[in-house]
Image (cartoon, rainbow, N blue to C red; front, side, top):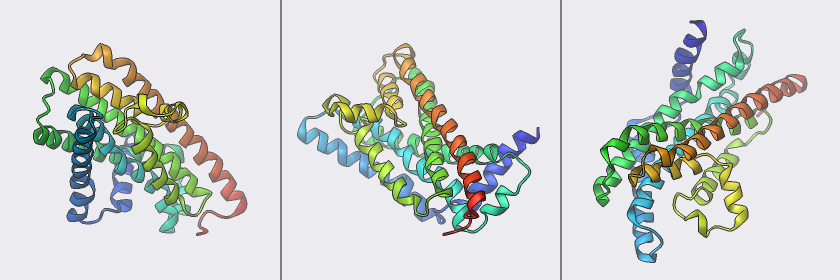
Length: 261
């Protein structure tokens, strides 16, 4: 019971304290409206160039929409504690710091799921995409897995904030890599081999494939392997984040550099 309270209540309190999109107007403009304009831009560009149909871009950008809040949110979960000078208090807690930080991904993943669903809904209405009703539960689960995977990826980047001063540069570059290498706007078959290899290890790559199978009506049997691969990628980043947090915490304690900016 104490662990569930730590994960649930602790994650929500930290989310409220560290959330940077501080006003409703900023939240709506940055996280709800922005991804829709990005979707429309790539959809019309794809039409002009004859790269892919509207379904390709609507589904791809809906999954990608979760990445902004989840990657930066996961980074905030650690880096902002150091930035605001409260990291020492967290690390002095008798509770498991691994559980404390991993639980912080959940509110941001929920946020990312909301944004992804909003982008998919509006994009489908504007561009006339029809998704089979029976595919909606599995599609929702796919978006949730993608949001969690991005959240743990962001937490891995946030763990670097215990060792490096400016982790936001890494986060910005990582979001750009998700746009370029995961197949959301450029068909993976058109990328060089090394780019495809890097993309296989990034979050949302496999979720996009699963979502496209579901939106096309191929059924869960076709989407299942890609969805399982996405869950594996997310789990891998969760483990990596836990290991880095533990290692950098020990190193920072030894060097007395936890609150050095």
